[in-house]
Length: 315
Image 1: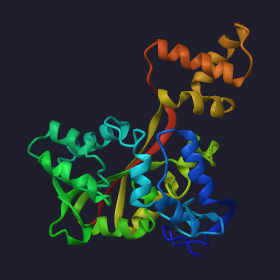
Image 2 (image 1 turned 45 degrees about the horizontal axis):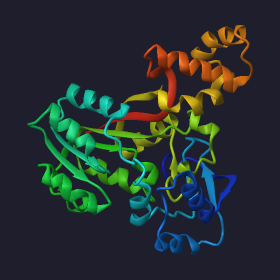
Image 3 (image 1 turned 60 degrees about the horizontal axis):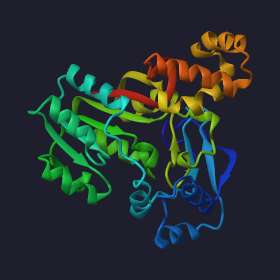
């Protein structure tokens, strides 16, 4: 299989294989609120062979094969545990770029519960805001709040000066087709804003996390992937940014990257050892508590979970 993104190399097996039923069991074990209906279990039972993960040696794009996207019932079940968040770092970044480039006709693809569109409407009440989500059950509440909605991207009659796709691509079975469609819906020089988990960030230390595996996540993205692939789709990359590591990930991510000497380790490692602390877990925990007490909520300079890409459609 050739890489569908950069189209320059054959995909290579990572030798990682996943059993879908095992992943579902791990979702349920992680939260008492998650209990998948029989329809979800039946959908994965059809796959007797493990799902395998492949990667492009040229652009680092990763994908699973065979492709088994999560069903609507799957996402309805996992959304019971705060799946959609009202406040995100990428919301702030996207709002900043949209205002800087005077974007006023905006389509949010994968809008979910509409939290991002609500934030945009609050800041710019005159903007033309439209939401689309594959889960059509989420759209009526948006319309009731005065937001436009699309039930099918292929039925869109006009063009937008900006399209946002925040934490969407990694869930899609054919991300190339979605990128091509969204590019076609952009006006010339229109903005396409994308966020995904950063496969080259700290999450690389947790490759078997159930939230990063199918049927939830089907593809894996890095800055190199976007920089090499988006120009082939007629897009110019304007900027790439990394989410500063947020405080709710410190307990898991800081111990994993402590030996890489991020700036908290350089500061708190000698202080902690002078206090008799031993081991990465104790030292990272001490740093986390001290920074929380100081009112720090994000670690600038240390990439967190998300990569943010702003691109423009070329003429």
